[in-house]
Image (cartoon, rainbow, N blue to C red; front, side):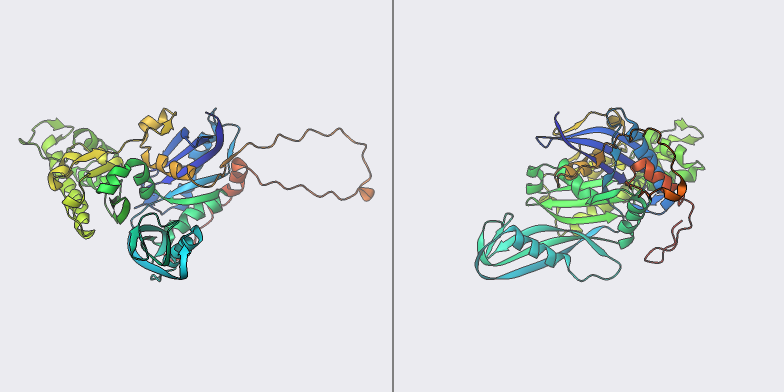
Length: 439
């Protein structure tokens, strides 16, 4: 593939940090060349960075391994696209309108004014607007999804404002921009990016729901008529089941193993008396089933909160995320809703050439990279300049008559920046903007 540019992306979740480097071809096709991950338990909670130093270390090791890949070296990562998700992300409906002086062609400039008006909505100080997603436009009296090029003296729109607590973005910037000294090309809303590659246009037009079950949060996005109409983040995920199993006097790693290998979201017809370690399989099943039913009940309830019924979602439910790999979870959701349920897969137009991508939950990082590939033609990697040749020795000039020399400055690459940042790693962290002390 003739490469046009390279992009790098980070997904920082409650269970892991994933980094990837991809190439965008002249035709615009994305090829994921390298993908790496680091476990991040407890340094990120509910999608929000809690420990600056630990998260810094996780990202550092991911980027270091990426830059050492033979198909990446000697390029250095100088910028990244970062995915954002978390417990406080949700949508708020906002109606905006513009009166035009006369019959006017609707242009990009007018649509930008309309979006800015939505983004300037008054919110309480606990939230900030991350993005504004248009649901439907009205030009004159006609509703449309494609207003550009139409003519009218009035335009209005319904936007879904994606909002979150300010600390989510500020902590991302503290780690990526301030500590790692990387240029943040853009912050991308991961669940929306995932919807772009996991759902077909047919599914979004007829009506469907995307459910991303993570370690500590579950994100629900609902689409009808081709547009997002509902976004909510629920504060629970697969780790809730694991922690329930820790009541069997097991450590988290062992409880996770029990959940994956012996758990099932649907109760067996006849309780099993088989022993798993020191426990009956029926004991494990009781914990897994009880919590799974609670999680699924809350997911299904979001349909009502969106003002819809199951009949409004004829294309059913699409699942993704690590928690969606639990045995029986698809069947349980189908049983609760009567809707068809399927697992999301990587689309054919994204090439995954790194075999690591087969073992890593890579849909979300691929979604971030796909969104990045559609944005401005910016390159996230640079080849460092060759070292300057050594100058021949010159005859020593007495100090008192030597002219002053100005030192040429160059911004260091990723590894050069790390040396500066390491000196700050154990610097005490103050309080964040909302008064939450960072550990």
